[in-house]
Figure 1: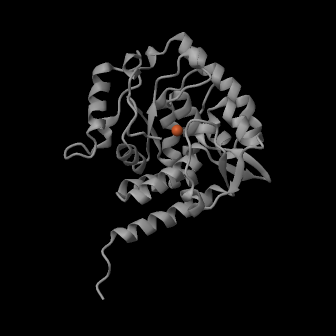
Figure 2: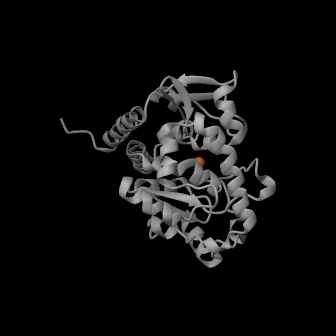
Length: 287
Ligand SMILES: [Fe+2]
C-alpha cells in the first residue's frame, strides 16, 4: 500500500534502476496532483534486468521455493492459477515485460516499474488505469525473512497473480477509481482499511476451506502460516461495512482477518461502494 510518509531511500543504489530516470520519476511522484503533474506514465521507469546479481536471483529462488511449498495447499486456487498463467518461475526474478505480455490479453492489467513509494493519489491513479506500480528491487539476502517495505517478491509474487483473474481485476480497477475520486477523509480511511483487509491480508473460503489470497500473507513465510493456524486470529466473515469500520495495526501479525465467500462478493461490494461515492459527488437534484 502506498504510504504518504514513506521515503524511497536506498532504491536508487540498485543497478537495475537508472538513477537519472528514477530521480525524475520520483520528483514527479512527489509533486503528483499539482497542475502539470497528473500523468501516471511519468511515474514509471525501466527494469534494467541485467542489473540483478546472482545473489539477487538466489534470494528470489529461496523465497519462491519456501513459499510455494506452503501455498500449494493453502493459497486460493485463483492465486495459484494466476501464478501459472503469468509464468512465475523459481529460477529467475520475473522480467516485468514477460508478465505483461501474458496479462494483457486476459485482463488488460500491466505491472509498471516505479522507483519507490508513491503518494496515495498517484498509486490510485495507476490502479484506475489497470496499471500496478511495482517495486523492482529485491530484498538483501541478509534480510530474507523480514523486509519492512515492499520489494519485487512482495509486489510480483504477492500481488500480480490475482491480476490475471477477471473478477479481481475489475474489483481492483474500481477500487482505484473510487479512491482517486474521493477527497473525503472519512471515505479515504475506509478505503484504506478495505485495501488492507482484502488486497493485502485477505482470506477466502474455497470448497469449505479457508485459503490465503492477500499479498501480505502470500509473500510472508511467518504470517501466511499464522493467518490460517493461530488461535489468536479472529477470522470473520467478510462484510464490507464491518471491514471498513475496522482499524488495522501494521507492526505485528494481524489479529483480525476477513474471509470472502468469493471474489464476486468483493467485486460487487466494491461496485456498490463506488456507486455510492459517485452519487455523493453529483449535485443534489433540484426539486
Ligand atoms: Fe502490497
